[in-house]
Length: 63
Image 1 (cartoon, one colour):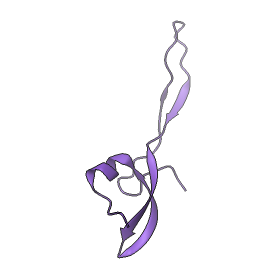
Image 2: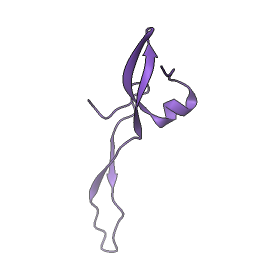
Image 3: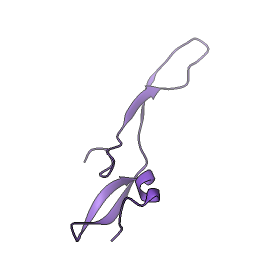
Image 4: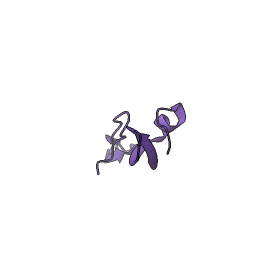
C-alpha cells in the first residue's frame, strides 16, 4: 500500500534535514499523518488509510 491518503491523495514529500553550520544538507522524507480507518464507501465498510486533515474536516464517514 502506498503512503498516500485515500481521500485527498496527500503523499510523501521530500525535503532537507536541518542545515549545519558547514552548510551540509541531507535529504529526508516528510510523511503525512495517515491513520487506518474503517469508513463507509458505496454502503460498504472499507478499511482506508486517511490523513488526519480529512478526518478532522469530516470528509470521511466512519463505519
